[in-house]
Amino acid sequence: MFTSAGESGIVRGTIRPIGPQRRIGEIFLGSWGRTLALSLLLLVLLAGVVWLAVSGRIADLRHTSFPGHSYPPAGLRVNPLSGNPNDLIDAREADRVGSQVRRDISVESAAFATGDTSQLPTSDTSRSLQQLRQLVAQNNSQGIVQREDDRWDSIVVGKLPNPATSTVGWCVQARGQATVTDISKSTGQPTGMRRYRFDGKFWLVKVGAAYLITDSEVANQPISNG
Image 1 (tube, rainbow, N blue to C red):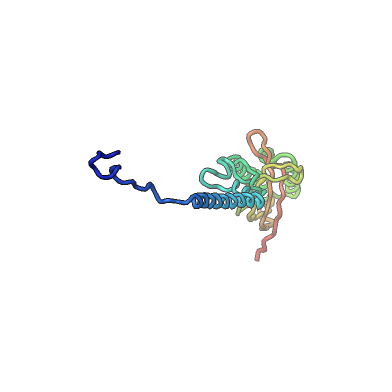
Image 2: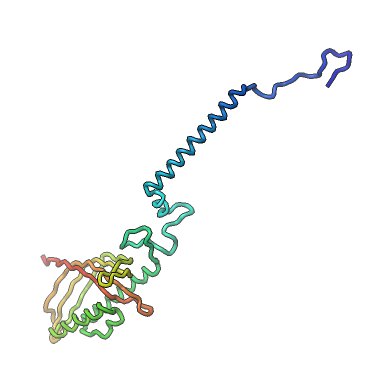
């Protein structure tokens, strides 16, 4: 604002600097510094992504649970018999198979204990049913029945190729101990007893609403009475 003629000076007040004065060269150097730092950061991030991809860590992250990402997804679990994190099975169906195999083996034990195979078709099918019928018939011809007491130490349910058919199906791996007593059908007296550790695999197929044992592989290791 201009002053009147009687006032000294021309402009009222003083001029205040807006900010510190910077040279043009400093402005450009500061900008380049920030650009360089950002570029280096991006290069580090890119190198990290490349390393994750080459080392397979990205796939590992896909198989890891963290906030916002649950693995395995709800209702599924990793197949414990394959160990492949990409091989997922239905958790509810696996629990059903595990429960069913115990029931099936209980029916088998009853057939050996009585010499009656009439209920075996409700627990076994195919090759397993045929083999069990032959074994019970062999006991009957010898005049004995067999009482088996099992103690299951572990049971693992998953899917595994069946060596007899090369098809992948439900399989139960069971480990434990068993005591088998031979009993004379004529006298009802024990004629022999043996104890062993077992490691077995049982393949099951769905027949109607039930899972029946179709094949099995069982390794027995005798336990010394001493």
